Length: 561
Image (cartoon, rainbow, N blue to C red):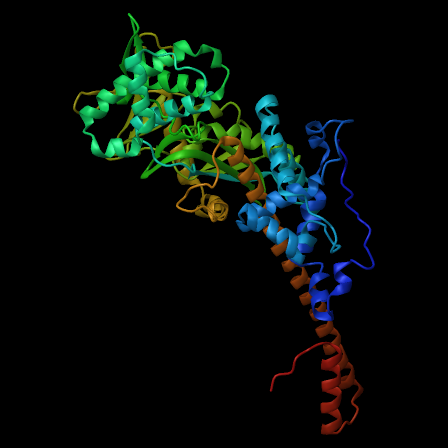
């Protein structure tokens, strides 16, 4: 049964933690700028529990534990890199951690472990069934409230992406096929008879007993190839004879592996696909079906791609407005539209300028990004020898090496192509052709060169955000498996990054206020000295020293000898 949390609990006179501490500890505990009190103010109390009502029955069952406390624990876990056991230990015995969750009485109970895990399970199941991420809604609501509170400007944003590996072992093709087949037979009831021929049963039994890693280590490539051919035939017969398990995840995973790794030929013959035909989104491990492969520069990752977008104003406070997690084979260009839309939804402000690197630029964005100044800090690929500019007379081609200029003419279209292309003849008599893509790229390079260096450097700060996001990762690997869990980690981690920025921002405000107060005191001090001087009172040296010291003490100045 759903029950809304009481976010303003009544203090118990006999159990209030603040009343049990000594003077010094009580001062730190009640410090309004302490991390625990700011965490409670800007995160725990800002959580909107309404979207989670759908996870609970309206009439049946016991009332749910506090959703705000449970979600606050999830955020705290990713903030400090706790394991689950460390998280519950901190929440039970760390007074500041309890205060951050709103547990201000010593006898306030935290939810038990089973309740914590059950809520996470319900959140994941809800997203699978309804394609609605409730943790994303928490992130958007809290960030939106923070932006309104501090007046953060969202008209300019910057973005960057990060590849993170899944928490899986690196498997070869043989290991992926072997582990998936083994996992299917382990998932079915052992009492169900194996529907294979006698020789196939013996072959299957030897496969299930072996360790795939040891097999790969001691066998030659030819032997591994033979084993994979045999596995393909066994998988084909298994899928054919166990169709009643077609709705189970293990069967669907086995079917996916078969379609990705093998071809079905006429006469029920099975052939192993060439390595070149295996796509990047093929199964990398049966223990994490969502992760995919990507090669980016010198980095090879089997995992996920995280895109982070934040505001980029000249104010002291900038916050993350959009967090997107996709499979590693998704290119950065697919994040642009959704990042802008998410930012507009969170900030309720129009995005006018976007700072990004060259991996984000694509002709597909030109129509959507009309009216938005897209500041790219680089363009992928090598610079062309020719600078192309479309003028009233036609396409003007400038040879950057010789400085010669030519006016290109329209060329004959390629068969089955609808786009125009241009050509001109160089000194050697060779015909050089240009497409719309080449003209667009040349224009982007000219625009980029014309921008001041200070504007191009504004994107660099988001790299520090990426560093803070990935700081808890070990060997660039996540602690989790599965796309849904990766998203939860990313949202919680970015909520904490925003919280730290707010905490530092409020600290700066306090320092500025103190400096302003001291400046006012200094003005009063100088006015006092000026009044004494104008009065022309004859004061002896001892009395003058006493008066000077008194004025300094009252105005909180420190005298240095």
